[in-house]
Length: 379
Image (cartoon, rainbow, N blue to C red):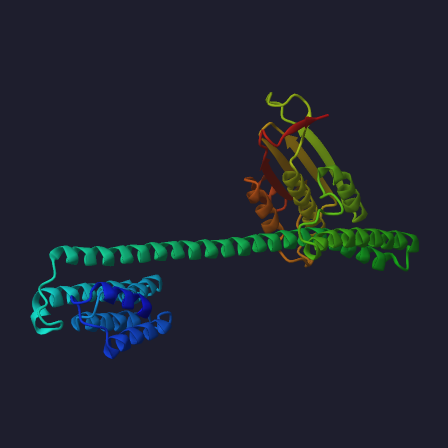
């Protein structure tokens, strides 16, 4: 700024006052104020305006000195102190107007005439241009900050969804397996002395159920240790329903599976292959429903009905009841987890006493929509 002002002074020799020590001190003071423009944007904006106004009142040459106010006002606007920036710019323009048209006769240089109104227009345009650029920079910075915040929120939301998915998977795996283990442990303890062979069978079932549970838990936890890697084993689906029936049988529950095709003409008699997400959700819903039968029902018989149409898969799980009042353990989140899975796919869950009778067993009905782009016909 000092170097540029020296060049400007040569071009205005005889028209404006010569640069002296006071002029250079004013410019140095204004430049020094800019060092604090980030921390004290309001004070710097008004301080640099005061330095430049005194500089103009002393009759010194026009030049880069105006950059002091430009930088100070720019920083104030970007920092969100718009009122201070516009007030400081207005004070500079008003000061220039007052000096150039009314106080020029009492201020150096001697014999100076009034400023032209065209010059005032140039000063006003210069001020508006600087302020407009500063406002644009402020808007862009706010947009960048908003985008950054949205990216962070999206990342946190994805992390929360992943944690919820993992928690749901662990709940479904552990709830079913622990229920089977709990029932078989009770059987083993009851028959340990009177029927050792049957107790041995119960222990074998416990070993098998715990081994499968450990395998599925390990698969879920692998996704935490190596994010983005493909799972080592395919996600379970309705093709593993026979295994689920066998596990329920080992817990003393007989399960009848009925695969039905709607008779309203919407299908051609073929079973529908499900999208992976729907297939997993269907398997977990049936698994949780059967787990609840083992835990909470006095019935040792359940029915699972799968009904396929072009638009949806309907899962119905019935037991004959009545409900037991004994504490079977568990987190109490089974129905909530089933509902979350169905809702995530745009489906619904209905759960309650079957046929409206308090002692007539329990029914769970899940409706999972199928889209035309995800559905394939398989034999």
